[in-house]
Length: 204
Image (tube, rainbow, N blue to C red; front, top):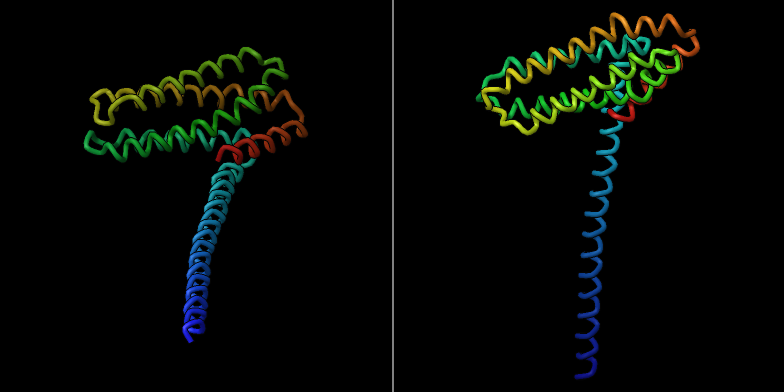
């Protein structure tokens, strides 16, 4: 009798242990599944954001129009930053992050597609000058990222930054881009548009 009781007790413990293990495994599996599901959703959301972000630029037409639309969007963001006051430090930091992202995306497309096309069209001087100005953009971003958002010089620095970007954009839109488009055929123009969109998608 004692032996049977011991067996029942041992069997009960085994079942309890198995059930407990199964429960723990199930929880881990559920957690892992949820994590994987969350990762998949995040990836899908990121992909959707990429398509949406790039679609907004690509919908403008050819590469020059697309880049001009990005210029306008960046200048509007500058204006929002300039409309803040020293108490809105959180908003300023968030907008500076958005500005940095937008300029990085824009510069990547120009430096990897448009400026090489300029060099091929023997407009090397323009390409070199515009790339130098991109370096100045990085310097402004560095200064603002290392400046307190309530610094009295913040607004003045943002205004100087905006003026620099606006002058750069005007030169591209009024002189460089139209001249390049006049020097290339429709096939190359379409290829540049496709590559600018692709570069923008990669950075979105």
